Amino acid sequence: MSEKKFSSRDRRKPLIFFVTGAAGTGKTVIIPSLYPLCPKHIVIDMDALYPTLEDWNSIKSSWIYVAYQLYLNRRISIICGMFFPYEFERVDISHLFTPYFIRLCCSDEEIIERLAARGWPEEKIREQQMCNQWIINHEEEFNSKSPLIDTSLISPCEVSTKIAKFIKTTCVKAHRSLYSG
Image 1 (cartoon, rainbow, N blue to C red):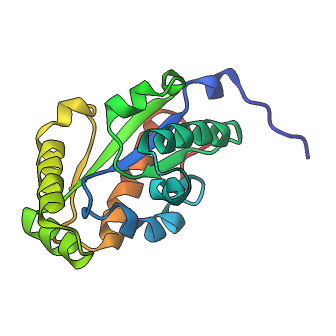
Image 2: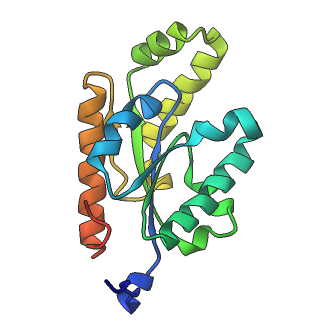
């Protein structure tokens, strides 16, 4: 069996997806249910490097470099973690990608409940509530096709299904049939 060569059509900028949101909106919780829904893509928990690096700028930059290596292996990355467009643009190889942001949000009450259950102090919870409101109110900072998924009243599986549907639709529209699935 011969190895298929990349065609000129495949040399377009690779897609990269970010599932972003304030702490407590469900980014980490949805990861296990995303794996089977996006089997041809690589789902990345951005927090996985935190114990080693402990510097969010280095972690975010590192994952972009990893995503590029995965692209060279014909895989699209789905990075789950709080990541904003301006942070992505600061990475020196960001120009090689076409980014898509999927924004998760939830009610203030849900953020309080979820983060208090983790033992977060009130001040940090308020910061995340403000971050959540900023994400909700600033769609233009992401991109015009950036979906907003409210995780307050739906299950992690339902959230993952909405994310997977957006990714598949985006890949098909971008004529990345090689990657869609």
